[in-house]
Length: 500
Image (cartoon, rainbow, N blue to C red; front, side, top):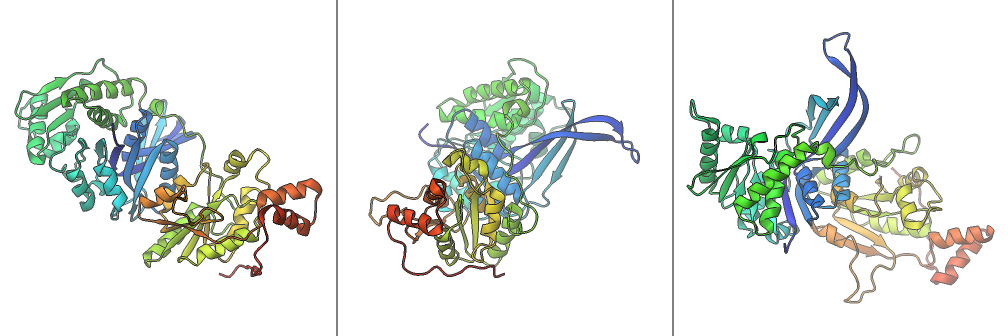
């Protein structure tokens, strides 16, 4: 494979709520589920991308994320799974699929998110990554990504093999896809069965009808525990049975099938070989326990929420409100990030300069566990609750979000700021100066990275070291920093106060 495997489609936030049922509701004859825990995971195209990444492939997910807490959670989960997220803006709310389970069985599925919103336009980087893919898997869940005109044009033009997993509420596959993979019910809905026709005859009729309608190279209709039926050209259909019969949770089996076929085609397999491999993969997936067994629980939960006095403008919900307000009026979103342990004048100067570049400033703050991982077990000195409150109190900061990962990449994939700001000696002005580490991510949606001037001699590490060395007063601590990092800027730093 010479390029990444690109997954295109709608991503949902799936949540499995596990519990116990020991009684009925007193006011209605329905079981009462006592919740014992829950697991979040990406669903839809996001689940397909996670499956591909788990096979060791370089995976890019082209999807749409909403400016809400669900979108932020998805970005975090996907990044942790090794998926590169190329997100389009999404109007409305993140679609969520909640399964209430007891004893290994689903009692009820609760869907929320409302009417699908319209995905925004893809950046040039999105179109390039589709053009350079080793394979493309379109995982359509009928919410609009597969209908986006610029994406469809790129999918029709790519030379990579395209596997299209359709949805009855979605558009047809673009002409020329190598393989389409509807399930039995989807094929029957798109190509109605003839009265009295057998199951295999109905599947064959659906596959051939969709192949001609979509001008696809081949169509494989998945038949659940009975394997798949493959039709290409006008030859006799190929029936691929499952290696063994297995019962279990089939959630995600169609995504596993499409991804396995796409990975096989990327390696140069024939379509018939790819379908046989996909049947084996999907069957083994169900037999092993389905999605609960295939995907381990997330390594960490969301960072703790800051509550109480001074917690205004802290958290993804507050950040989402700022994003919605600024983007609704066509404004520019600016973001920056860091540990901000022992907030000092150098930090403030960077934040003030960043705020002047746009219409809002969002600060991505490393959580306590993230800081400890980066700087050692004795850091941070100031816990995340206090650090976030101090930042939110500055007039130049509009909102603060806390992230657990070592880098802000997941937060950035959700925020999609127009400008990402770094303060300090990150650029020398030379032509061969290294790019900021976040620059590649910003290019995914057409954003820009910039460096703003900083105040010499301000260093949290040196301040902590000087204080621990002898408890010197502030002037002595500053003198130690001055001797190691140069003279301070002569201009005074203006006082900062909350002005809302």
